[in-house]
Length: 247
Image 1 (spheres, one colour):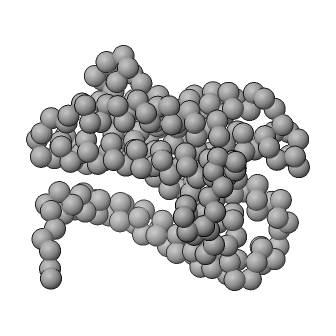
Image 2: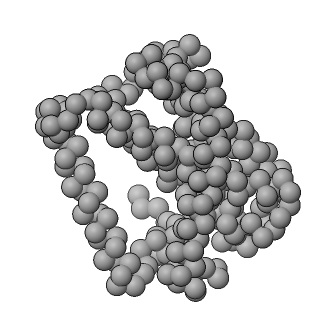
């Protein structure tokens, strides 16, 4: 039985796939690179890391460094949320949506890097509670899975709720989303704290065996992250279609 798709989702798809020739060329290039990456990973998954010609330290460092980088970008959205919802600065209202969207995409990349690093993503079901052995709260990896997926769900719901109400011309209910916003602020701190604990617990990496690793992660994320968001906003202001920005 066919179901009628809500106009909101239709319009979202129109906006996502609308652009100039440069937009389609850029997206086609990214799609090609993504397909090449998927193909290369399929070979690595079936043959092992031997096909890369690198030691496991190199590949592990590549995956984990990118994971750490995107965790910082995801946590940086908090720096846009705090001025609006804590200090009441209305000038940040439009930038918050960009920050939330960037946090969601960064979290997806974080999870993908972890999945690739695991080597056997077909065994992920072992970490699902009741089906497998989640080993929470003893396992730091279980904490990491909890904070990453929890932060992704929070940001996805907040962004969808705000955009959906804006689309329908309805004022969002602050009793629904504001508590989740404050919860996401605490959750963002937890992302870097848990990641730092996870790294500090690796005995083979003595450089990370430091009690100030967590604060250093937070400081770097809350400074470098907003800088990258500013660059994104500058690109959007320069190249995006003004007709859709106005909406």
